[in-house]
Image 1 (tube, chains in turn orange, purple):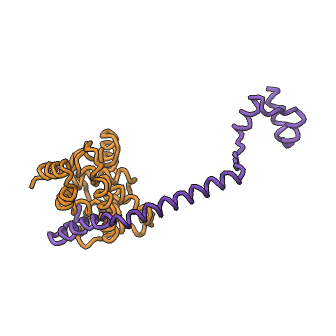
Image 2: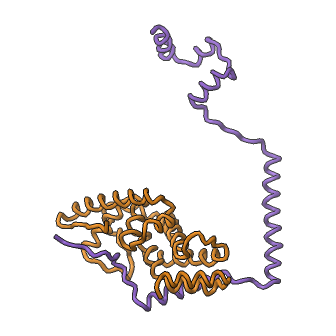
Image 3: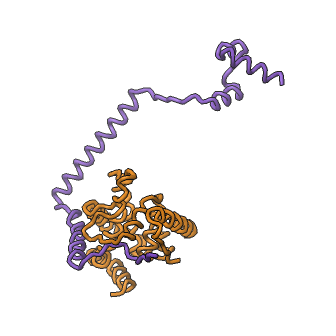
Length: 187
Length: 111
């Protein structure tokens, strides 16, 4: 089913107060995406699973009160991102020593990367939080700025600036790691 | 020159995706409705607990004097002096300042 079709199906179930069905549809379509988003933030498989679990509870409980101002998936993504950031702050993983920077890569059984992608993650870990999140949602997930704006609560203009600065910084950091590394952005 | 792909390196196989879906769906189990009898007990227990907490706060409010501590900054002190709330004679001021400060003050007046 195409994402838009899924979104319509979720909306129909929600409108009919069939929250069980709406939640199941959301989970079926987006469980992997939520995990992916979580593990890119917290960088740990078990922690990401906990984040998805906690976020799932909030999504399930929040479904009846959902305002309908955005897509269900966007609303759910926002919950996952906030939960992941809260988990990260609790665990203090962001305060990683420079020599442990390879921790900037997700510690997940599903993560497989060549040296260049690993270098990208290392460069990413040097960015401020907002820039890092903007980059991940835009570059990895190819989400439109309007959707990222709803997820992060930042203006579209601010996001474009964040992305621009993120790309410039990544290019610099990657070239420092290896002069042969280059980075090409989508835009 | 090395080129990059746009993937994030996180490849989730179908079985893992199904496990993640099941994992998400267990969220519904954590918020099951309690039986009516137990729900009413929780309601009363919650109400009593809330009343006790409120009682503690009210009691503390009645028995303790408010403890207002204000940090006296230079700006605050100057504002208080200018507004006339604080009356300070030259003698009082000279008691508060050390010799170096007094000399500086006098020199400033002579500019």
